[in-house]
Image (tube, rainbow, N blue to C red; front, side, top):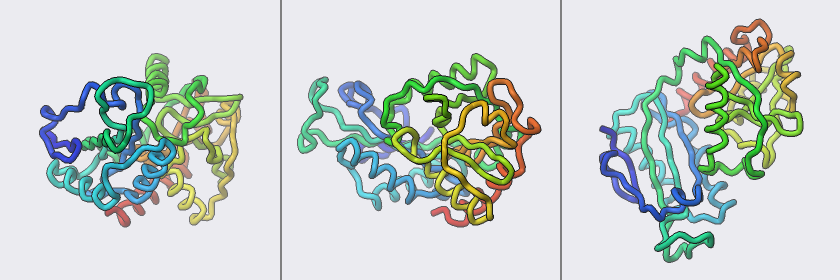
Length: 285
């Protein structure tokens, strides 16, 4: 049985509870992060901690812990749960006031809530990374601040279910004719040796893995172009792939039923995955 962290306590998962008045439960008034674990160490913890701080700031939400305390909690959960590979989910909400109200509670009277738990998962040798995944396109109807990593994940969940119903693995969301991102990942295409991905804005999540992969690509003398692209352009590309904290770099082989390139995982995506995992193992905390 897993040990989880809830508001200052390490508890067996079946004893972990939050208030029914918690605003994360009632209002999706919360933010989250997922930090991957390889070889029992944390991948890019600093990047996730900085993005968490930004998300909290954008929502005027107080953090109940310092970054150092957060690192200690992550490490303790890895140790007590003997987690070698997988991820740690972290969620901070605006807390649990005395009653439900649209207005924010006074942070001096209602402290933020914090929950963390581990999830064991095969990351480095995931079979889907070698086979590639299929995606469908869906309309992007989310709110306008997708750069804030909130727990408002209903539409991405619906998107994954739309993909599953269509016999695909995931969905890419489209707005004004351009791909924004996947349901839980950033989206890319490759033309020649040029990697194309949407530029950062409020329209997409500022992926921590995205930043690392683009840096590694440039170091490997690959050209990177940050701009939007359509589904049609993606279908005609040489390669396509996604990145996220738990998928790393994962090839996309079909989009809306059309094969991308050869219909097999592309060399650039596989090479980026290889060097990303190699660097992550070296720099993990």
